[in-house]
Image (cartoon, rainbow, N blue to C red):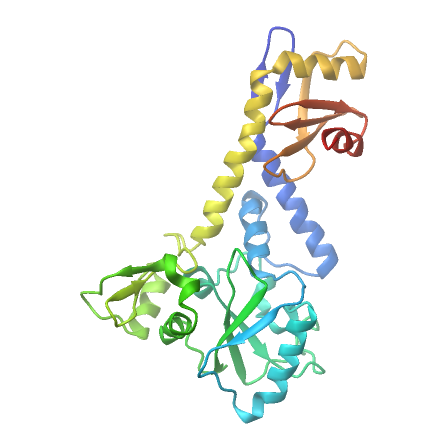
Length: 323
């Protein structure tokens, strides 16, 4: 996209820049953590946000258990090890599905209900095919965490690994019965006119159809995880991409409305006759600041909702903007 003023021209494709940066984030993640499968450059922003939603930043978390929560005797030591890892703030990736490092994998239970599942495993035994993970145990822990506050992990149930039921609506009722304050924004008065059992829900979910859960007391619950899009992707992540793109586009609009002022600042810094500039986004922007490099030059541009800064480095730009 070209922004043309009376004296200067600035080129910036914000959508392309966001996707390019997100792809670089995925590549950097690959280098740091090993192989990350199915990275797609054309959908990098979605994949980066999806990966971030699956992974949990290492930090100490408290644990709350459902009142009827119980653990098979043969899994108690594994559960204790997992609890210690949660409370100590350890990286929990090794307890997760190996698909967590598949950039294209859609965990539809997570998209639908925001339920995590963790493998209750011996922390001293590694997976034979992938040493980043623990050897798979016989049981899975189903847990819930709020998207806006992941300081607490809520333990719902332990289920057998081999007979895992990913559409078990009893899990939703456990959450509603034990922590009604967590789901109140997703609860509506009413009931379903047709019953939906777990097998029905499995078929619906396989076809990317969202269905409420009838709590059986004149209330239904829907949208715990925001839901699944028609193409099988996460509605929450698609919405985040759109919102993020719209917020980033505000910076492009700021540049568009003041092309000559910004062009003059860059021109003064370069001290040459150049009148046309291409901008490259340096970081995924927040809602306050975006930093660009003027292509093929040592000049950087910082943009906020109130001012512009041109300097010889990204650090100088940020330092000036933060004064």
